[in-house]
Image (cartoon, rainbow, N blue to C red; front, side):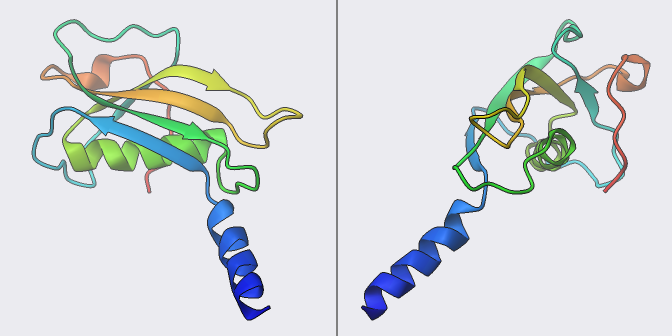
Length: 127
């Protein structure tokens, strides 16, 4: 009986997190916390000569929390800094619905050597 209770508690605790799948094919030195990261929406083009470093997917585990649009982008921006990417490009974005309470997203990370401040982008608060 104790094993059942412990298993249930562990299941509930770990199933509250969103499912995150990541694939990083190349890394650079981490970027400082104050470095600018451009966040591009689905319809915004990626600058020429940008290098794809990897992808990340945010999905719902069934009981997920902290998985709204801006939370996912904040997590993606943090991960981009860790792998040396300065562009976060939203590839797919599905709003919460009857099936899922999470914003489901597919995002790509890019390294761009040009001036990213001139790129039209989504604005987030610094964290």
